[in-house]
Amino acid sequence: MRKNLILGLAVFLGVLMAAAVFYYNTFIDPTSSKSAELKSRQAHTFPSQQTLYQMGLYLDLPNRTLYGNNAMHLVNNSGQAMDELWLTAYPNAFTYEDDSPASPSAYYDGFNPGGMEFDYFKINGRTVAYETQGIAVRIPLQECIEPGQPFNLEVKYRTRIPRLAYRFGSKDGVFMLSYAYPMLNVLDASGWHKSYNSKYGDPFCLASANYLVRLNLPDGYNFVSPGVVTDALAEDNGRQSFLIKAENIRDFSLVVMYDYKEIGQQVEATNVKCYFPAGVAGPGNGILQQSYEMLSYYSDIFGSTYPFSDLKIVFVPMKGVNTSEHSGLIFLSDTMLDSFRQQEYSYFSLAHEISHQWWYGLVGNDQVKEPWLDEGLANWSSYKFLAATRGMKTPASGNSFDRMNLERELKDIKSAQDYSRLAYSGGEDFWFDLEKKVGGRKLDKILQRYVSDFSGSIASAEDVRTIIDQETGRDMSKFYQPWFQQ
Ligand SMILES: [Zn+2]
Image 1 (cartoon, protein in one colour):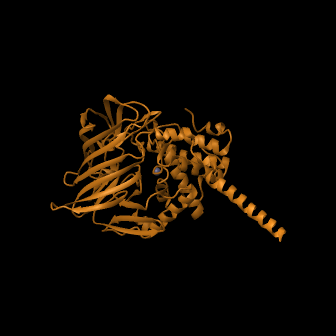
Image 2 (cartoon, protein in one colour):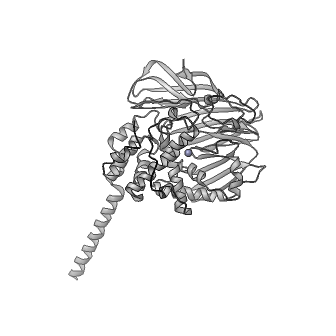
Image 3 (spheres, helix red, strand yellow):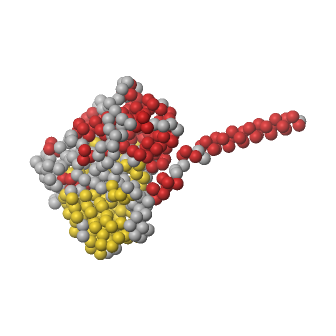
């Protein structure tokens, strides 16, 4: 009897100790918590993650103009006095033919300018001066905004939408409104992350924020945007307005369209929805199933579930560029519809775009200064998905990599091929090279740490190197040497 009691006690203690070790490894792993330095740095990145864009958008169809206003209650959380504010006005990339990032073939009616004009900027109710240079907008401040000081920023503007089959433009009654409102740039200890015109890539560094948008459209028109519609109101003037709420998104881009069809599929917590013109054959339900498979694969390997209740994929008229990623939303060119329907499509682009929900959506980066960070990981992720689920070969099956200097920003890039070599091939090769060096399981841990440390925030190449060093516990400077040569 006594022997049984001792045995029982020993088993009980054994189970307790195993549970304690399991609990420690799962929940109190010291490497999974952010350092105090990182927490402080993220808390001092302006604008804060709690920033709310309150926007009114009114689409004037005959004049292809979007009338807008933003009102933002902000706090200078940057830890430094602000003597200027910087914003990005992406539509100004389309003002001059020579500057435009769209290919000439996308101007189906010849060159047609787009742009953004401002009625005013107001700080704490007072009109302030501003300067624009291409897509960059600077507001010099007469009086500094001190650290910790709250302030209100209001802007009223008009966005001219060009006749253009691109992620910003309009064709056949479809309005592609990517980054069509003034967006705050990021300020951190390294200074302002400014934007400038570039023919290649995404000239943005965007903080994650919340949005409350009132969208006013003519009757009969519909739209696809991030977030949920919380209210819809029919007006007696042939127009309707919608109230949309979206949280923790990088950008509030949308498509306004007439006569579209929707297909959707809810699997577990995520609803994948796909939109295409009613007059043409749709992509088929395969795209929904594939997208769901990608979302769940990435949720598993990155250790962080897809953050929204739905993912919206919309086919739009785009030429020269086939895809555009936004928070909770993906634009695909309508020229891809046939290949999806016939299931001939390799799904590489779809897997790439969906992984941007992690590499851009969740983990932000300065896409002007370090475009390889999100694009390289998106390509690497796409290869990993196709290798794991379709047996596809990856570039890692080769023996050597063309190790290039990744320390180049958009202004250093001279051609589309150059951009592709840097951001896509260079970026993906960095991760495949690292995988060869440290192994797949270690790389998974590195990426999981990257997501958990930088979700909702902005990461840099230096942060990537820090995580690799800490997770491998090795001196990796020799490995970095060919990839980063400042
Ligand atoms: Zn991409």
